[in-house]
Amino acid sequence: MTRIHLEQIAHARSGDKGDGSNVGLIAYTDTGYQLLRQALTPQRVKAHFSQICLGEVERFELPNLRALNFILHDSLGGGGSESVKTDAQGKTHGQALLRMELDLPDDLPLADLIPPTH
Image (cartoon, rainbow, N blue to C red):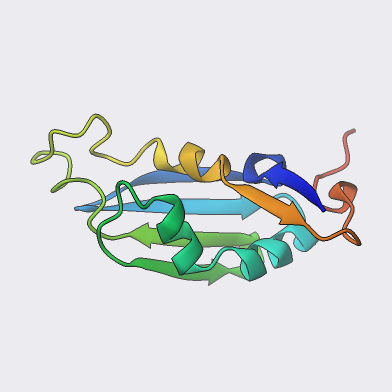
């Protein structure tokens, strides 16, 4: 198996929703999206953010965008105006998710997960 970081096959956007952060992960290819759908369960994302996410993690699928959207409840210490956290708006949570490692199956080449360069 080959181990990769999610940033090799996707990009992300994140922000806040009250006391929860909102993390969108967008795959570069259809194959990458299918891999992310299988691998990134709410439980796995919660484990990745175990130090900051005290509530549940919800996942929403947006197949037409090749995207998954995660809401990390109770992860911002009360939200922007109440929290003493450095990132009370969750803006770095997308980058943090992109640092998650993933094992690729041997029969899935990395080239199928990244867009061709022009």
